[in-house]
Length: 238
Image (cartoon, rainbow, N blue to C red; front, top):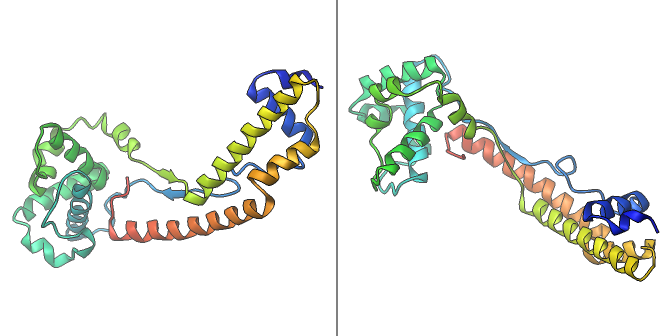
């Protein structure tokens, strides 16, 4: 019996992997099942100032419902260029859009930061479009701090449910094997290949393992496509 089986859980598990790695299923890391990736919020795109204004409007309509009850606010994915004509402060919005474009400010991030600031004042209703993109607010903001604030709401990853199920089962298998190894150690016995195989078959048999991997990969492809579609429409996913 090797001495490591009397050590920490990490030591015991390392010894099990070294001795019985051919029996254990591969750890379901992100190299086995990728994660769903949500890129950082977009900058303003294109060269048309009117298009920039529409993108600012979309970001506002997409972000505010995550912070406030926005009854009556038009859905972000229903906005079109014609809706800009209903914006009473369009001239001011155009001016702010140019500044936002030049400073490489991410509209969704700015809207989220603005909503958080507004909510800290215990205001229940959402801030107005004019306040969020107000010229004075944009110019008075500490832009030395902005990059770190934007990084907080940068690229994110998500694990799909089948992947989480797989990792939980793998952890359960690992805990049971460590416990069994220690129990046999107390009896002066070694952990045998049959012990390992018994636990693997009970918690994470090969058919279940492969099935969960297949299901998880399929879920990742579906969710990644959904993310791409939502971002194309201007959704707030952060």
